[in-house]
Every structure is written in C-alpha cells, then in structure tokens.
Length: 303
Length: 303
Image 1 (cartoon, rainbow over the protein chains, first blue to last red):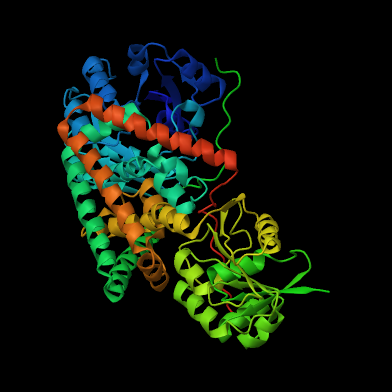
Image 2: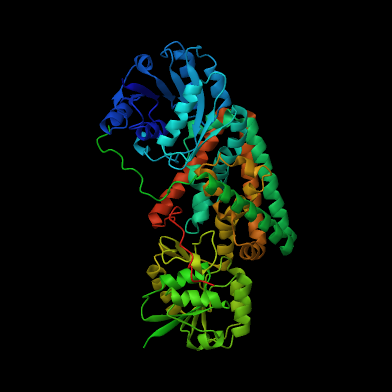
C-alpha cells in the first residue's frame, strides 16, 4: 500500500523537497499550503501528486510529514496540530535553526517521531515557482536526532537524503548546529547585506567582478524568514560576527603597517586554510550549485 | 600586412587574453614569458601563434603590447624596456591597481601610446593551464586613458574588449578605479580570507552551503599577487574595510537589541539595495561566470 508524505508549506524549499521526492520509495506526495495560487501551481506543475486544503485532513494521512514553513510558523503549527498527526507518523522540518524547533517539537505526543533536519541548500529567490528538483544535489543534509526520534525514522531520513541527491548526512545536536550555522550561513548573509549598505554602492556599478557577485548574491534575501533566523540564533550569530570583525581588523592593521612580508605570511596562512577546507569538502563529495543556470520560468498561467 | 600583439606574461590572465584574442582583426599573437614550460605549453596548446624568448626582440615587433605581469613586474618591465618599444606601439596592461601602473608608464617615450586597463575577470587559480578563452565573457573592461593615450589606441581597446566578450567598457581615472576596486574586489578578498581565519574552521566542514562557498571562494588566492595589490592600494582598501566593519557592527547591534521590527526594516533596506544593484547590472549586460564548470585539465605533457 502506498504511503503518504505530507509537505506543509510549498515555498522554495518545500516545493523543491516535493519535486525531489518524486519516485521516493512507495510514497505519494500530498501538498498543503495556505495560498490557493501556490496549491494550483503545485498540482498543475506536478510538484506534488495531490493537494489537501485542510491540514488536519492531510495530517491524518501523513506517514512522513515535512514542515517547510518559516521557523515561527513551524513552532505554531506543531502547537496547533499536535493532536492531529497520525499515530506512528514521522515528522521532520527543513529549518535553518534547530534549537527553537526542537523546543517546539516537545509538544508532540509519544506516538509521533520527530527528527529535526536542515538540508543545506537554497537560493536567493522565494516561492514555489523557483523550486528545483535538483536543489539538494551535492548538499549536506544535517539531522539533529534526539530522544523523540525513532531509529526507523532516522534510517528513512538517510535514504531520503540520498534520494534527493545530498552528498552526505551530518548528525549533530541542535546546539552545535545553531552555533556552526551562525558562522557558515547566517554570517554570510550579514556580510552580504553589510557590503550592500555602503552609501556609494550604486556608483560602483561597472566595477563588479565575480568576487563581488559571489559575496553579495544572498543579500537579496527573504526578509521575514531571515529576520526570524537571525533573531532565533542571535547569541551565536553575534559571537560569530565579533570574531569576523576581529579578523577583518587584524587584516586592516597588517595592510596599514606597510610590512609586506608580514601581510604575505598572513595571506599564505589564510589561503592554505581555504585550500585545506576545499580538500575536506571534495572528500565529502559536497558541491556547490551552478549559479548561472537560467532561472526557472514563471508559470504564465499563474494568477 | 599582419600586425602583432605581444603578450608579456602568460599566466592566468595573460594566457586568457591570448586565447580570447584569437582571430582579432589581422593580429598575430606573440607570447613572452620567463618560464620555459609556460612558453612550451602556450605554443603546444595554441594559446599564442608564436613565442619569443627575448622580450627585446618581441617588443620590436609589437604593434600592441599587453603587459600581464604582477603590478611591480609591470612597473619594472616598463622601466627596463622603455626604449625597446616599437615607435607607434600601443601598450596596455591588465593590472588590478591603476595609480601605480600609470606612474610607472610615465617613463615611456612620446612615440608610444599607453592605456591602462583592467578587465574585471579572473578565477582563484593561477597559471596558463587554468587560462580560458571565455574568461572575459560578460565582464566589465575598465580603461584609464590619459594624456599618454592616443584616440586610435582607445578605439582599438574598445573593439578588443568586444572581441574578448566583455559586456562593456568603463572609462575612469586611475584614482577612481583604485578607490572603487578597493571595495568591489580587494575587500571581497579580505572578507574571504578573514572568514577562513576562524580558529574552528575545519570543524565547520559538513555545514557549508552555497553562501559559504561563494563568499570564501577567492580566499585560495595568489599570495604574491594580492600582497602587491593590497599594499599598492592600502589607503583606499583600509578605508573600505573600516566602512564594512561599521556596517557589520550596526547589524550586530540591531540583532543584539532584540528589536525584530528594526532588524526587519534594516534587512529590507539592504535587500532592496542589492536588488537595485542586480537590475543595474542586468541593464549593463554584465554577467558572472559559471563557477561549477569543470576546471581545465592540466596538460599531462607539461614538464
């Protein structure tokens, strides 16, 4: 008998998860979203197999439930629907903070397994029309299993991560996840927006190279989502930013000093670290996405 | 009669310029390099049409001379060979700082035209074996013409920029170039190396997403080259870094304050600026390079 995956929230990541899960074992994909145009888009474009308007009816059928809402949306959804999950259901999320989500998931009854998840992929766009079946190709899939997670559920998530094309599955605690993500993801977004705050930015047009494009790409971010992510992880993020400010200041002082030998040694040190990081990443099989491929075309039928 | 382009220095940029200039008007490409293996590679792989071991003999034939050395190398080459350029020769360079180069070019006799140039393209790799014919596709080509630049030479550079695939030609002063490049290029490299200086960097492996990869890509830099570029533009670069530190600190304070509405407004402001920058860039026709394409394979024959 077919089992059901219910995807709650068909935005960029929910839509991409739904697309990527096509053909995963014997699961049928049911989509739930508060937006009618999004649900219509999902069914017309084969993002899901079925849609359900009522989340309670959807949850009643869900063997695996993917929560793909903004962080506070997930916490609220868990509180509101804690009794609506099917007994034996396995629930996961895709959120970029894990401490707050795990706390929210504590309301779930014992009959439900929860595994926090964070597939490390995305783009600077939002919405189902930008979702991609190959979004997770070569990405890391981070899981934060705990006492609420059944071994069967963890094994399912590992098969699922392989199916959507992830390079590997990293298991960690919510605390460690949030501390590291503050540095490797959230801080990159703060750097990008800070660079764009320069008062003369628009006068620099014509002088951008790929290093500028790469560094600032994510500045065109989804504001409500990132406001939540930054706020829900503010201690770790501020600590990361303080470290960065220190390292930037050290470079500025090395340049100001005029001691080119010292500057050269400092650059050698940093460049060697980056090359070592590249080697570690290559060994893991993780790869970046092609940023120059044409964006998916919006569905002209969408109203 | 065929004219000659002499490319002095067949590294990443010199090699790429040489490749991209194949078929440009009626020019033949002569390559000069101090490295025998590089010259052999250049001729065996059709990077140039001919090689000349002796720069003096090469310059005697050069109607157009491209100086593709590190900044101090260009200044030294100009001083050493000031009397060896063919009368009527047009000389240009590809260097990422312009003030110091223009100063160096002042030694040239009146019989030679000089136009400072900076095609805004590159990769984090060095050497001819990483050179690419399409390196300059969609890039900005910056020129800093002055009293030493003949109108004929400027017109030639504009046709040449089109031939190598550049999106546009930007004309500016050396001072403005250096001030802006400090921000749009040099600072991006200081950000990348500073991010890699975090003491726990290697423990973050497994948690990198594309924002991390994009931001730190250029940290694996050519140390001697960038030591020179940073040192020769230290005032502008340090000023840019101070601005960035201020903007980062403002974001850190906004996050620390816990005022999510203020944080959201601040993010909206920055994200709107980035989107506006994207629009300006799209209008100019400039595009980034595909970073996921396989790297060129090293020539197994190279000794």
